[in-house]
Length: 463
Image (cartoon, rainbow, N blue to C red):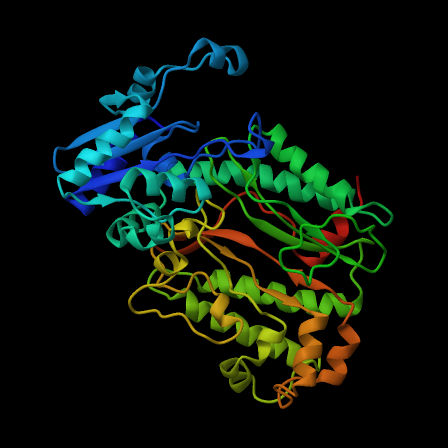
């Protein structure tokens, strides 16, 4: 946990932004895998973790802005709990650790909130993302479950997003701790890659490193020779010479902060000329994107810059044709680059996405596009010092999408379908790093992980 003063200061900042009403923070509960006593690894709600720091189930908190009172709701352990789970500090000790003066049994929360509702006072809560949250909020506040989301407080959302978006030096330290483990995950996967092994052999190594470091993975490992499937969690393929491995994985530190890195490398340890051509386009786009990062710059503009680099590179290898600017403006390049350039990173791998992507990645001066590909851009707004974000361009050959567009005769003036058809079994390439926006530009976080062609060819299969 952070020092108690950090949690107290975070809550003071939030109080000044919100001013009046009562802020409700429901913590997460255990989530059963297949029966109640066999649960998934517990993960606390990130906003609760940010303001109250306690990574355990059975907790809720309120901040009464009108009386300037903070209360932690939870129960001390009984003997049955201690037998099965071991001794844990009592509620009084938990309060001391996070600077909260008052605590009450969790059973008192319904009556406490009912009294606030009866007074006609505003209860602010954030959008729920688990079924348990919908049900609890419905029961606690007397709201129909189907209407709970519509009662979520936009003012509260905006206040939390504004605060959590700017990472402190303490947070950067923990993100880099996660990235230190992530470095080991990726380098190990590269070294152990060779023809004949299975994807699950590498995925197991990767996840094991995260667990051995005292944390876990920040998201289910994406490791596949079918890199054209953007979020491919299937690990059943056997690696063959001539294929590419896409490894999109990251560790979560013991404090809950995430790393999120993607590397693409050849199974055989040597890129084919065709693979090297496409890889070089993606790498150039990624490096140029990182160089373009600076405060005041809209990430939307950097995404468009990357799209032009990708389109120009694909034109040079005869996969695209015509005017590059027109092709990007109309969205023809999205056949190969159908996702956004990146997203915010922090306590969540897609930081604060549960609060609403439009609040996190967009602002009043930046509206979401409806164009295919560009519509998936999670972060488009003007960048500020303290943002941590991912930079992850890619080029993919998705047979179903290629065949659909070809049948529809879509963008024939920009896409050389005859040539593209030769790449249907190519797969995909993505390169991703995590970058801190600084006053002077952008700083790539973490220990460098090989991504130049020569570096990758020198390390793959060396274990």
